[in-house]
Length: 224
Ligand code: CA
Image: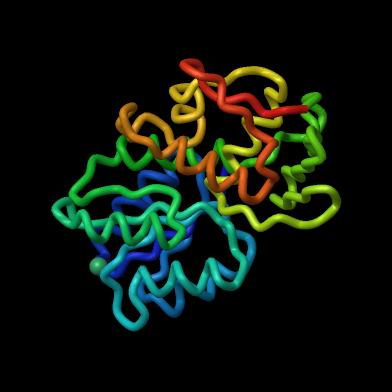
């Protein structure tokens, strides 16, 4: 069960999303304007935010911007108008983890919520999964979502952290672009997209240029 914050001013949509998520066993809170939404999101007990863009007061973009600039890495799924490609790009660049074009079926949103929660949730204690992954001088704390390189903190976005996590879990092994795309972005990305290569570039800059080796025709390997 997760606590999901829904920031949406259209009551019909807010209640549709809230009811659906509660039926799946989650706890939900609805905020109908941006300022309230930001306060709730920053309160720290929220596991995921479903965020509308068109909101009274501060809009979804500004909310997201303030949330990220205040250090919150809570996963955010943005609701956008279907024809609004610019909005989507802006949202993803602004730190959203995913987007959902309106109108949508609940099952579509639910699948994205599950994926983002799975990526964000630390492994539960006692199942043998470590809380801290260490390889090649990089340390990832899965509980605090902190990354350190040679003892110094590295600022990773939610997406970069997810990518670093799969690399460290499989340190020394070659991972294909498709594997990385599936794990980090889900199925909603075109396999022809170069998003993996772009993010590997970001990670190299933050974790050290020799941390990730390109294996021609196969993918990438994180060096131990
Ligand atoms: Ca709206």
